[in-house]
Amino acid sequence: MNGKKVAVIMGSDSDLPIVEKATGILKEYGVPYEMRIMSAHRCPAKVAEFSKNAAENGFGVIIAAAGMAAHLAGAIAANTTLPVIGIPIKSTLEGMDALLATVQMPSGIPVATVGINNSKNAALLAVQILALSDEALAAKLKEERVKMEQEVAQKDAKLNG
Image 1 (cartoon, rainbow, N blue to C red):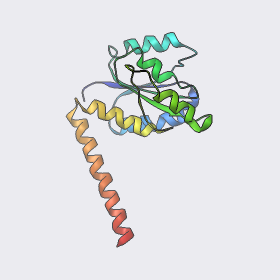
Image 2 (cartoon, rainbow, N blue to C red):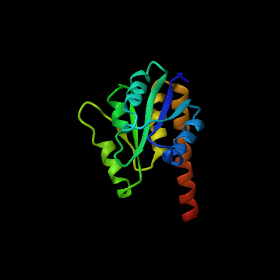
Image 3 (cartoon, rainbow, N blue to C red):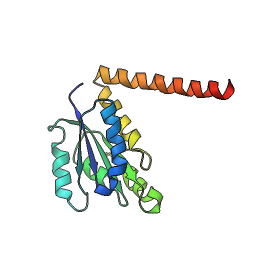
């Protein structure tokens, strides 16, 4: 492993059931992570301080999960050059409010955004980013893709066998 860890930040403890799916994937791949609760609106100075210091504190990627106004990923991205992955959390408006708030960032401050509540893809994207400089992690990802392909082939054979 390259030693980089993933920060998994959620706006509220109510986001924990969704976020735990991401941490399960990170554990599966052996990627170290830290989880925190920080609100872009209730503690903006704390969010900014964490973000500004994330790289020097050993983080390589930040995952941010928030619902409703969902400005957490953007507030983090505004204060770091690390890759930030946003998870819009379904709350009101079927999560469309969170999706749009997460994905519609101004030019120059990107946030990679996954589907509503799709923390599994957020974790996999974080792993892929870290795998750019970690051959063992890249090999694990490739093995998983082969396994997924084999599972689909088995299901197809069973259906048509």
